[in-house]
Image (cartoon, rainbow, N blue to C red; front, side):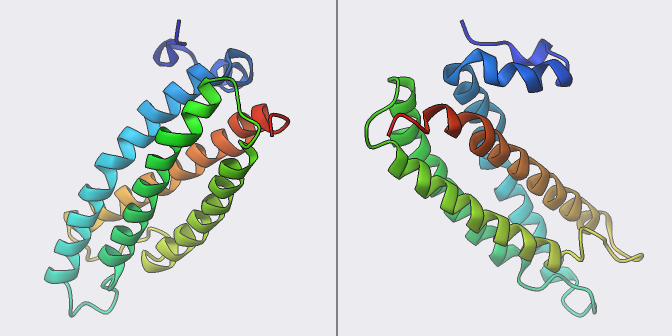
Length: 170
């Protein structure tokens, strides 16, 4: 039976992931992060396109932010698709002698995401909008901060808890 993470306090949840096994953690990752990212990115891209169009003459206009988010989304959707189609089924089947290869690729792509997140922080001046920013601009930077926080937690759960459970399987 999957772990009902909605009812657990955060401090219990943190220690629980290592104990519940990969099935519950994979389910959590897909529901809490993969599905959420699929909504977050189109929303943030639409906000960024609007801000860039309306405020193109503003000295702090985040030019290129929408394109950067679109590239991030494209890479992330491809990455998540490979996890869901290849890596997670291997894990749910108990591992595979070759599992270290997709895990290594996912870890490498996580390092790429870290670089993309650094660029996101630069484009948004560390999510700090100008004093005269409209509400859409503020919503955009809040969305970008949320994406950043979620991606960091998503990758931490995979890199530090899920992947090590299979380190010896390959």
